[in-house]
Length: 175
Image (cartoon, rainbow, N blue to C red; front, side):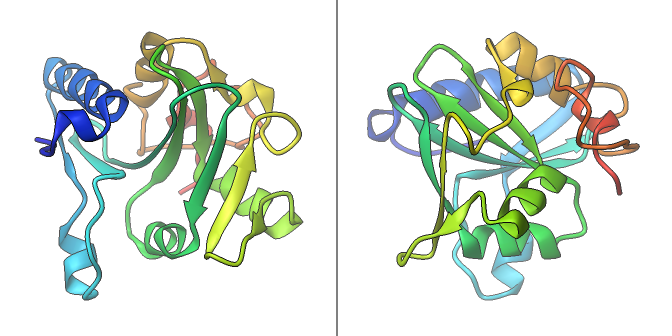
C-alpha cells in the first residue's frame, strides 16, 4: 500500500489508490519500490511503484498538476530502474483527469541517447509535451492506462517500443 499525506499531492494519491484497486481486482500487489534501493543505500521514493503477481513491473510516476505537461525525471532514479532486474516504464500524468503518457523503458533510453531529453544542472532530464514525447504514447484516461499496464503479457513478453500504446505495454517491451 502507498502511504503518505493525501494533502501533499492529492493527484498522486488518487492515482495510487485507483492503481491499487485495479491491482487487487487483477490479483496483483502494489507497493512503493524500496527493497532494492535500500540494499544500495539509497532513499526510497514513492514515485516508483512496484506491481507484482500476474504483472511484474516498476512504474515511475511523475505528475504535472496542470497542462501542458512538463516533468523533471531524476537521472539517478532512471539509473536505479535501468540496473534493476524488473521491467519498467514511466507514467507521466497531466492534471487530475487521469490522462498522460505511458513511456516504455526503451523509449526512455532512446530519448536520452538521442539528446531529446536533456540533462539539466540539477540532475533531472527535462521532458515536455510536444516534440520530446511521442503522441502515440498518450493515454486519455486511467482506464486506457490500466488496460496497457495490466495486459496478460505485461512484463513477461515484448516487442518493439515503436508499437502504439493501444497495444498492451508488455507487448512493447523487450526483456
